[in-house]
Image 1 (cartoon, rainbow, N blue to C red):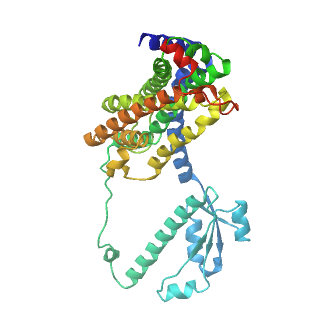
Image 2: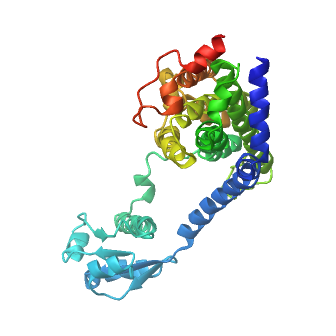
Length: 412
């Protein structure tokens, strides 16, 4: 173990001297995490407020068929009636947001107290189409209510005749839960990302980098065993990843206290209890990725080639975050808490809204411990293969026997 610690200290010294690794490990989480969190919250607020304040450009086809309706729409604060023209072309060019088509039999059907179908044409790829649908639909609904009230008054009936059952919405979610939901879309993703990129450069440097610099062979010729070598290198990669994770979590925890949201009853709060549970799981996640990064990087002959090899791992790690953010109620199935990486993301989202389910936590921890151990074993096995370490097959050389000259030197 002493030799493994020597290798570990040596790799950590090289890491500390590398400015690129220091920037990813320290500066990037400190600056990037609070900035992304603040900007994301503010952009969401700005987008919501912008959609509410936007004035919809509405064109009406068949305006003469329903002058009362058109007059009602033109008096709405957020709707502006545009001049008539080629609706399809104007929608594609973005000069109008929607086109309301009024049928020729509108007046006769209204007078006969029959329903009328209006067509609202929009181009869904345009940014303001949804705002147009919402505002026009709401205005039509209000106009429809006025027409019904007039009909009831003519018959001497009260408009309360239509209001048999009313729904009063009451949201039982606390402001902490609402804020945790907002944070739950961002924090798990960046914890996974930093668990990979935090130790990526170190993993590449201690494996493919040493092969490229021709310093791996002298290390293997020392009395140090392969297990001690891979242990020292793994600890170095894992340390860098874990430091990045700790700094990221600390940056989120500190910056969350300074973030205010104008969303009603929503407050960005990170509970200390949630942090204390998330942190060890995130560190296990970092250790698992560190072992995988080390095993993948040793296959490469150069730094650039190792980066290409790591790309699929990066995609595979981010994919669970995307799925977790789009599929609701993932926590209802215990099998999700067994899948490595995916379980951490789902559990983090639960913890951030204040759901502390003991079975979910225990299954996630057990799964992460097992797969972290499995990843370390896999990395150690890769480092015991001379054909991988020296690329004999890719160089067209005959594959070395199982007991290479280095193995025999160590046995002596």
